[in-house]
Length: 112
Length: 113
Image (cartoon, rainbow over all chains, first blue to last red; front, side, top):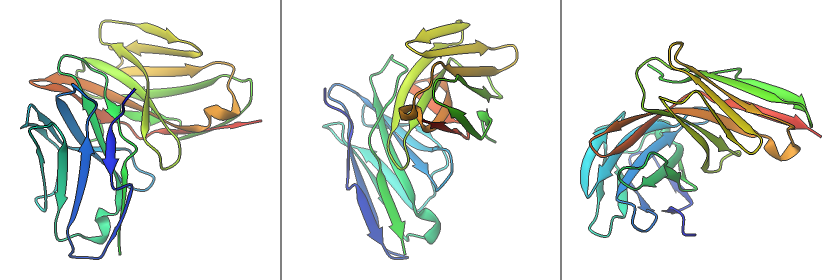
């Protein structure tokens, strides 16, 4: 069965650079969630989208933005990267009306 | 503030023993889910229990939920070395579009062969 696809798997950037993370949800899933997990930390909710509209916002910095496109894939754009942005970024998808989230393998972002 | 907090933070047991992990939360929920994470890898859904349920089983997993105490426990019976991983509880709140999960701090389980 198809799973949530995230790209890239690893990303290395320098301070003040920008990064774009991509997420392709499971087919027919209409809701996408982004989470950030720092080293040794629990995943923190950033933002979610339903039918291409932002539905919930968590602890997402103003330097970050995200959107969901017509094909339901989502991109997380991160600007003016800081050392503290180094983390594992997860995308998850679900189908509206269901409670189970399916997570991708994550993108490991390292900011040097 | 953290919604779900887990106890213990780390647990080391021998293969064949049972492992119990606890989770507490603070606000009203629609459901509580347990996820497993191998080091640096994705989160794998294990089991979901709804707020109107008290106990649920799935294979070697047993989850309980006490909404009056705002707590849940995950029991893994007859543990195996392959169960070594971090286990997170996540509380779910249904909103206009989906089920927003708030994760707890996780329990690092090590099962020694």
